[in-house]
Image (tube, rainbow, N blue to C red):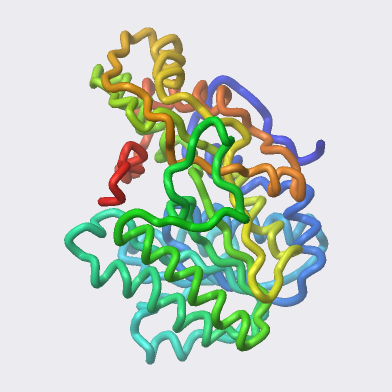
Length: 348
């Protein structure tokens, strides 16, 4: 397959990492060739936004299509805008919850919706619902004439029996806690406005995107490296290389519908937390101590639909673990945004 990342045992720099994360797949390139017009990324300054927007530029260039790629965020970190600008991404500073600022945003034919609040949602339930549900309604209404790919999360599913292979897109949601319920609310907003305005929409239920600076595998690697005891009660999880998640997100522009097309973006394997820790122990030459007994259910998603539509993920779980182990041992940068994958009561 073309556009395959070059596999080495280690990634030497953030620049090399972000180049890998923004390398498009054939499916992403094909989607960027078929859609018409500019693309707007709402909430571009988050964990995935910068490399996803950069991938949109690279995929468009590979497809021979000239378009504007625009990123919108609060940009509380002043270094974020010039870094995006350097890769050809236009930027607009905007507080999306401010109706006046939202109204001034340009109308574009293609929108990727990414704003969300997860961490710190316990104790800030009102803001969590405003960010995750109310804002989705505002943006869905403003961009009712656009094509929209909207991010959601696998947290809208209940814990599911490991033996069943993970929650599928057709399963009934069962969110646990305010964060997950507000995320289902976000989906309902996009569903509502898609239906009444015939807005072509896709909803991406992500579980879990991983790179070297954050993600479930990074959380576990850092615990092993620090000699911390790892709670394995959650038992199992999904992990997908963020570059593959980025590519599937762009490829989803090929499968928009009204009511929305629902897609799980998840890794192909159900990974044992205990086995992940043992693998990091081997890679890092560190002893590992696990506590707890694996539950029979976990927050896991079945990503087979996306793999059939857009191709099998390019980076395997073990390759991610090799990269992450070397990155952590080398003191590589970390975003300090733990996933709290072990949370079973929905309190984030």
